[in-house]
Length: 100
Image (cartoon, rainbow, N blue to C red; front, side, top):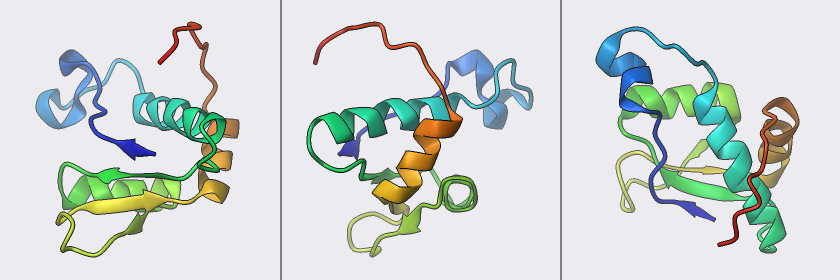
């Protein structure tokens, strides 16, 4: 499943404001996307593009992301199903019941 756009609320953006009120927002967003990936038959696989090299390296360290070839995007990445399974275990969330 491709993550087209995922970001925290502007007032919770550590890169912009140097402080965060809520930690783990990105993990929760990845957990939701991974759950949808499983339900849609993609085995939890996610791919997308990080904002920059620093955030890509964060995703590699924290979520087991892998860099994809630069011909796609300079910060293209993929997170395999075994790593998204761990993300879904670590980051809990309440699903609102909205449908796609």
